[in-house]
Image 1 (tube, rainbow, N blue to C red):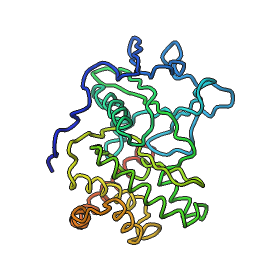
Image 2 (image 1 turned 90 degrees about the vertical axis):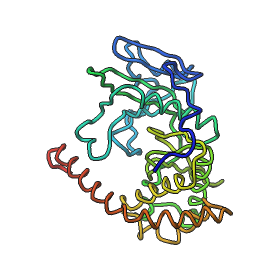
Image 3 (image 1 turned 90 degrees about the horizontal axis):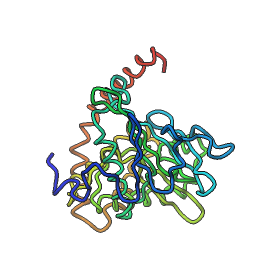
Image 4 (image 1 turned 60 degrees about the vertical axis):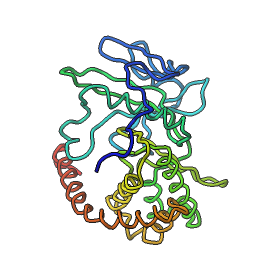
Length: 308
């Protein structure tokens, strides 16, 4: 399907860091770091992991491609930072691992994240990007973001609900509305998330309400206008994530899906009708994706010597 409108039209495409960032470089590495956070790096360009006594090194509560390193922001800033190492996913992830051709993909995530926050899209604040040359035009990289405290991704939330340790059922409706409005605002801003899945949506549940965030804007695009079919097909990716993790027809049934679609579409009857049409036509693709998931898991087991 072709793109609607002009893609990434508001994102600068040059070699200089975004506003509020400074550039630091070494023999084979380059860092963009937000002003005021240079203490995250030591003299050799490595991430400091001793900024505060007792700070956890690994954020075991987070899931994704590999572990996240959790760093204290030090005495002048509250909270922590999370270091995510770029790793490839999918069928070829076990073969290509963490090598990328050029720096464009890393740089673009920083630029898109800055743009999204400026548009009011709730997402993680990028604090730094570090890329390293690996030879033959290949690069590896880390992205550092401010931790969104007291939150958990939707996959972890649903796992807790399945085990009986989740939130009270009454909060289910608040979470559905919060996530629907998050994605509605994201799409209205013109942001297309390339990997919209349960792990990339965080929810904060408190006595005062529910707040949702979208994270991991790797390969995300800014498209104006973001047409209704692209918006809905983006939602289909989230639906596939529910199927992949085994929550469909278990914790998430037709009642929850209808509530989400209605909250997302609001009073837009044409969008609601189109949503039903696109989802019905795209459901056959689930068989293709299920085959891909099976193959990917098999390759990962081979890469680990057959262990699960």
